[in-house]
Length: 304
Image 1 (cartoon, one colour):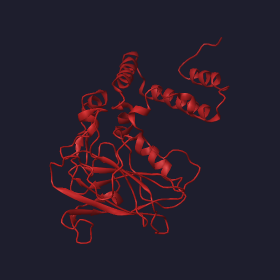
Image 2 (tube, rainbow, N blue to C red; image 1 turned 90 degrees about the vertical axis):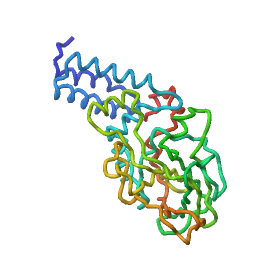
Image 3 (cartoon, rainbow, N blue to C red; image 1 turned 30 degrees about the vertical axis):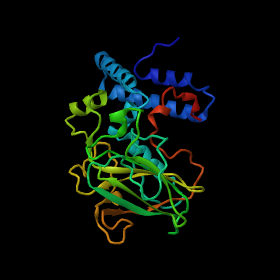
């Protein structure tokens, strides 16, 4: 038995974890304990503040459902999701399209539509066409790639916010043609506030942050032998393009709809954007995020 103080308790905790069978879990928890303890010492955390933090994290968990992922939202607004994305991007075998965040509104079971279809069930705003090509690092088209796409409607709402798990809209899965080309119709999405009715929203308000995301369209692109690409394109004229509350925007991902006589639907405004995939490596999952329904009951023993 040893008397512990604010310094020696850190070593005592780490010593108790040394028999963890998973090397990776031991490495992660070792660092987590050291940094958490250093944080508490650095800010001189009081019992009242510690309890407030415990209550905050408890409410985060209680707010999560099969259609809402408040913990991912917290990671996003703290920039942790963007950090993990940036670290993962460095492991790519080849130069590919810049990644962006999967976000808390991804769903795995979106409907498969034909090229040229609209992802909006009942468009209530002018349509535009999005078209492009999925390419490899050498510039050749990738045939039969899977292109998943999802976005808000023209009023700034995801289907999950309006309908929970009951209905899907403004999302779809497409398969590229023999040359890796794809196109679909949609409406222009509206930028939006992150959900402000929960603990993350209250934190953002307490920090005097605007809590807005610029208008964007999400993409998840995959093909046999290639690394999965999670990214988004962002609309240049959105007022929050330079201050995204979840830090997802890159200059290379900014687009502007415009008339385009070369598009598959020349009567509509168009966005033309080509995506480049890297060859696959042995680096595990590329998705910084998940379908919220997949995270209900997730287990820690998967690590390592």
